Amino acid sequence: MSRTEVIPVPVLGRHAVNAYLLLGRHPVIVDAGTPGSGRRIVEQVAARGVDPADIRLVVVTHGHIDHFGSAAELRRLTGAPIAAHAADLGPYRSGRVREPYLPTGPMGRFMARSPKLHEQVEPFEPDLLLHGETALADFGVEGRIIPTPGHTAGSVAVLTDDGDLVAGDLIANSFMGLIRGRPANPPFHDDPLANLASLRAMLDLGPTRLHVGHGTPLDPTRAARWAAAEQRRLERRAARGRLRVRPQEPAGASDEETAGAAERT
Image: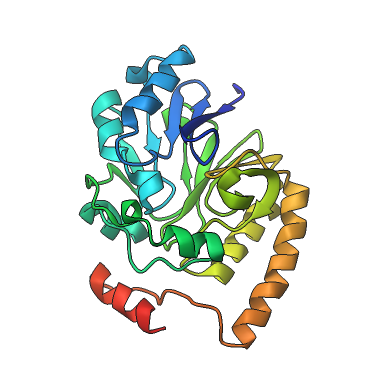
């Protein structure tokens, strides 16, 4: 079994927004960055000595613009199929995130005012529509894609057989990666308690390191301590009725209908 190397591909700033290159028997990309960043990702892949045409799969972890913004462009540049979860299919097909954003704190409230987060980006149809755990061996990486609902309904993470967890936005570094190594929430969660349950389930699998969408790798032990404290904080907020959650989207409901329901929550 070949070891899988996990290489960060900075998309914005040094670590503010990351995609990842997984190098196993064949290369796989996780996340597609902000709109217009496809060529930057491909150039960094090539700088690692990897022919972009050899990319076997692009995994999109969830339906936020900074993670799927260049998915369609990456597919054109590499020829690789896109894997994404069915529960976020609405944003992928429309090129728009489900709104309103539900901030986790001051950073999220500030960022939610940015026009760039409300743009329509190039939509795409996933080539591999995910519903449950999916092995990556056929694409050249010893590992699996695991659904991690909460940040969005269709969030996923990638866990390699070596123990590296490419966590998407399950967890982040403080202030969009500015404070390295300190666990924190990303700016938004659709369902903070559900996301925390997914994070704790992933930590129970014993990963050796967490590679996040915003910041540098996190130590699982430190992340687990943070998760325990965060559980208590969220439970207090929920008991006071101060925890905003996006309602479950009924089958066939439009993103606009769901966004309106969230606004009323």
